Length: 591
Image (tube, rainbow, N blue to C red; front, top):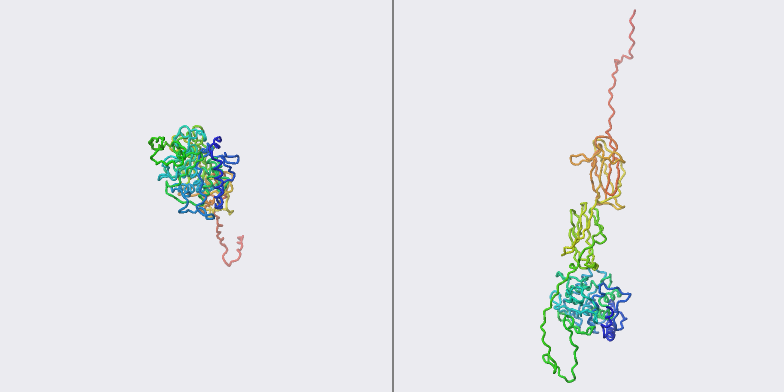
């Protein structure tokens, strides 16, 4: 491809001097934030050097290094030197006027890209500069109400004769040529580049390189590729060179960027200034698929100028050739190129209940040759018995593959239902085999349970434990909210066997000794007083608390029998009558 570059600009030596002069004049009045073009231009083109970023297009540039308009802006800028930049003006030089739809498309593209890729710092004046050089602002704004050019704008056939040699990549869908490619539309994308970067910016359901809204947004995204920051001069230069690998092209675009930064005004569609001079010496007539215009001849002095309907002596008036209405070729959608979806890294999404999944489902769209396909709609759908969902509660979402052909689902959130289900990825509008991801939801976990407080717990038989019981659950040191806790009455701190007697819980009319509880948002579990009843048998029992993840704690429960008061003793009656003193011995009978 590089062999054609020097040949393409036959008048480079002179135009380079003119460009340099114009750059110097404009730089004297440009705003401080405007970026000056490089000063190394010597009148010829160059390919991207070792220090440049390789353009993202498969052919090396967005336009295939097609020809461009070489007119320079007037030396009198729209605003006076020193005035503020970016001021809309009502009137000014005709060259400063941009057709209404075209200007709106540039500004809409800037706004859209700044919202999604703010680090690129794309100015709409850069799109205007490229649009001016590539197509004269869509041929002076000759577009319909939707922003589509009234007739296709086509560059020359890229057959290697004075230009790059690029074989057909789109079956003639965009450029009508099934043998070689041609640059297409107001931003002059070659079909292979459009297949990757094409956009539907006007939301009409199709990506049309002949639509100024679609083309402007695609150009902005292309210029922002490779994480460029266009506020940096080096990245700005690389971005422009990736569009057309010519230093003269870079300088020329920057003169128009600087010019538009000094102020522009809106003109009606179709009334913009049409440029004439092109870098290949051809006339604008070759842009659509029409024959090249013959070189103009200079009549001899004194020769009267013929009227439009007259012919000079010896000149044969060419026959009138009926004009056929332009035929819009069928659009080959990116989805039509895809032959399979491939799972990236075989991700297996997992999550605990109520949390975000790890292992985001990601796929890459590939064509029959194994190349990635950008701009493909991929539908991610949740299949199976689950209450998991995407952000916002959706169970199906559609994502478009990026420039590398990759599509990743939005964040997936687990519900409260454990188990497995499937996340299925399919190509929108196609019946290709789906890419399935097996997703698993497990219970929330806590690897540690610790009792809060040390007060001994005791109760008497037939009563209840009146002290509040509180434990804290953590997982890897972090509080663990919403974790299921199994509470069980056991007889030993080493034996997890459920007790058949002693303390218990009451569930309705039932006596149970195992219940399931849940930690609160602070990771704490609190058993209110009177939750655990003492039972009828005294002894020492334990409340065993466990969690998924290994948390465990034993809390002693002492059940005592009620204390028995000492029995009451009646006094022994005195057999001696009161006042008689000690009993006397009974005399023995006399003989």
